[in-house]
Length: 382
Image (cartoon, rainbow, N blue to C red):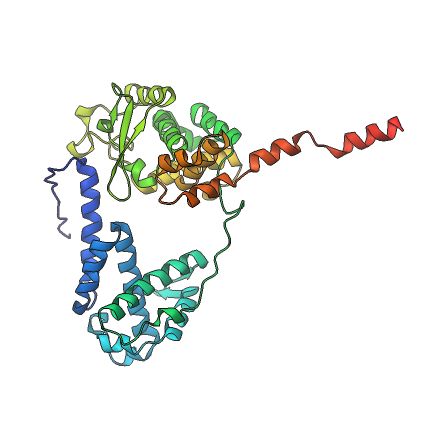
């Protein structure tokens, strides 16, 4: 059995231990990928470490590793090397823009066969392709900037056309759907018999989770990292840590206070029954461990699928509840700049996409505009 290494956090910062531990996990995963890449790329690794967010760094390293593996599998480099660590700067200097365009096209749909002969088909839409193109572009720009390539080939990369932001791009619950979702978590209506067995033990936790998501538009990572100590009811606020590691303080309203008290007093496991690392975690599984990202997604998909009348698989992700918070707040007449601040959008144009989502307004406009009865009435009058 493999020896599982336990990492202990020696934390002297203001951040909670679980936040520091998560940052360390990302850091270690980045380092593990870097060890599989050519050693001469250390300058690029340092550039990412100092120039982009940790999750962006991890994503770019994954994409770079995939690109180099593609070169050894699909180009003439397969005759030269068996390990991507052997690739040299001169090999990449020989790559032209059309070669990268072929790689992007390859990424639209490709197959991977495992050792047992099982085949997995991967299919990527334009948004995913744009991300891959961005990662490769950043890498080649770095190579050119540091003199490892004679010319900047990124100008020749084919554009990837993304759909213009529009009404149908934004998927969010309407206010009446939010109320039905919250009603489902309170009553258990719409759950299967098996789901109700879990619901009896987790309904207060799930209610608090959903309320936090639709009220504050929290990101999944921000939700997952919340602790009991994040909440200060004397001051009426709680603290979250954003994607750039910065603190943000959120005000607590009466709805959240009531849901928090119900969960902690009626359902959450007592502190003396928990392992030390889980004692402060806000959202606990039935095993007494901090909920994972996947577990939170499953809860959200379950209750959103009930309110929308879809399968569990078609339920919304936590990010769609973030969109729900944005559209609901703007629909209530709140300043777009205040909503931008609450949701931590880098640019107000992102928030403006939600302001353009006017489905509720259209529903109200058409609600009392029926043709059938009006036509019949007019025919009778004439």
